[in-house]
Image (cartoon, rainbow, N blue to C red):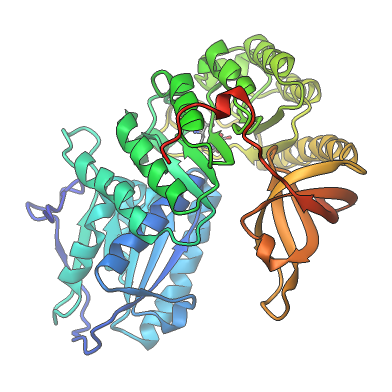
Amino acid sequence: MAELVDALDLGSSGIIRGGSNPFTRKRSIMLVYLETFGCQMNELDSELVKQQLKNNSYKFVEEDKSADIILVNTCSVRDLSEQKVLSRLGYFKLLKDMKPQLIIGIIGCMAERKKEILIAYPQIDLLVGPNRLYEISTLLKNIIGISKRTKQVSLFNIDRKDSSLELLERMDLERLQDIENRKQAYVRITRGCNKFCSYCVIPKTRGFEIHRNKDAILYEIKALVEAGVVEITLLGQTVNHYPEFHALLKDIHDRFPKLERLRFMTNYPRDISDDILDVMRNSSRICKYLHIPAQSGSNKILKLMNRGYTREHYLALIRKARSKMPDISIVGDMIVGFPGETQEDFEQSLSLIEEVQYQNLYIFKYSPRPDTVSFRKMIEDVSSKEKQIRHFKMLSLQQQISLKHLKNQLGKIVVILVEKALNAKLYMSARLIGRTEGNDVVIFQGSRDLIGKIVNIRIEYITSYILGGSFVSEFKNDHSYEDHKKTSQD
Ligand code: SAH
Ligand code: F3S
């Protein structure tokens, strides 16, 4: 099974001889420290890697210094994401200098994208791309216990017919063995992306779009709900691009009445049908929450980005969503300083933000990524100083809008899912943190028993863009809506 892909043209085996430190391993249980950068998809991948390694008798530790193996799940979406990992690698090298038998693995998007460079780092033993994560335990076995270290590389060759899907799929399903006490979970519905926005590396690192089988998704959700999960977030780069997505949403909602909250992200503005909005409106436990990035408010820039929609189309969609669900939370992403973005284009982004009134907005400075169209074909004509200024202006505007939204919540009773306690486990009463269905973060003082429950909180104050309040009562979902009465698998 451990077919090593020589996407690097490393010779027929894909194995590079290297590392001069002979070592033998005495301990039978290996301790792993796993660090995760990037998006929700990476968080899910890390969970699956953890599961795979636990099934193979590895143990996980919270501290890098006590580990035998350090794995870093990486992100390539912006240069800054990669720089963070590179600086961690410097530190891990120091650890390895002190402990030469330490194994260091880079997994995820950066392993895929920066393979030629990373392979030369002496401290790195293992490189595994996002579509090969199922091979980690086999590759580690190849490293552990042998005296002459060989670098293990397993990457995805996007141009080749690939047979890894079944093995990847198995990883998603194997997680079910380790879900005790979990209240929230991510479930992937689509891998990869086909949109090829001109600035984005994801189609290169994660490959073409592949939708998971609906039965596998339902099977996974059933097991999660039976194990006590009450909130599921469906993941996909363009989640709403899943065939008949509205039917999938409705099916999940109707089949699992014990699932208190269903979310999905990230949405692509072009494929949000009326059917999807109607299912959201009519299904009480689907969160009225849409993460739907515009990226720019200028039609010229949207075209250069290859986004496939216009400002007018985007705004019409937001208006339609709000007309169907007046309380819906809209969250977006914006890029400032894309090649060709003039002051006027930037102001159009600001005016779009004013018009949409995002509850929350993720703002990024354009980062040219090698191998993308914008990198190869466009001139980066916005200076980094100007990007900084635009970023700051956009952030200030959004902060005013977010604050206005939060002030509107003062005095109201909101419904939240309690996620965790913020302070150490000394007393039963703790500072608890949770989220509303619109993803507002709320803190309050309450009993630890409430973790994992849905509760009513009266909002009394705002602190650093977080709502604070006091406990009112537990929320009782009486499942009395028509759509709750549908088939239950209980
Ligand atoms: N699938 C998601 C995008 C994932 S990347 C979607 O379609 O929205 C997350 C966000 O990072 C993007 O929405 C975009 O705003 C930002 N981003 C992606 N590539 C970037 C780049 N090269 N420079 C700056 N920001 C970028
Ligand atoms: Fe990237 Fe665009 Fe897909 S931002 S992930 S190519 S939708």
